[in-house]
Length: 270
Image (cartoon, rainbow, N blue to C red):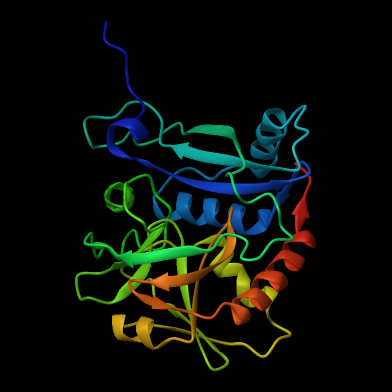
């Protein structure tokens, strides 16, 4: 009798989120929980239980004594179904895994905290409004874009959509700085809405920054005063170089410090 395989493994039928852990507490948990709920709703999964999930996370963090760690939560639709067709009433499987904090990020007094040099990726983000914004398990575009960076002198790459508009970095969102404007690509057709990006407006609400969410051209990347990448684990990362062009990091420093302060005020004990 053959063993049934998880639909997440077979078809990428699932979604995930990656949470920063600081001194045993979850950073920005409300944004991650909101992401999980939205993903379940849009992908037609049964509702998730937050108390059960927090208990599962707490069990994974038992005896954790690191200052920083990472928790990955992956929700699969589970087993069964006929090929691509899922069961009418699926039984999701939730995987929770503790991961080590990435190297090079532990000295939060250093600047740049985690700076990046970027190139332009030849891999494009496909248009799919049904899945846009979600961190679903079909991430082959990102995998291929990361694979292309192996052996290069670049840490990251700008990914475009089929129309040539800027969408994101390979594993982070992108924000351009011009004057007092923070400009980030509109993600209604492709890309992932990161928890750091979605929370940054709240972290910066009492500052001079004004947000623009709209289509962004590649020319605007070259014209920006500064650029930063952001994600849940690495936070705000200044882009020091794109292709052959360098950027100032002073404004990004201010934003990164505001983000770190906000993170410290938004911790959840699982």
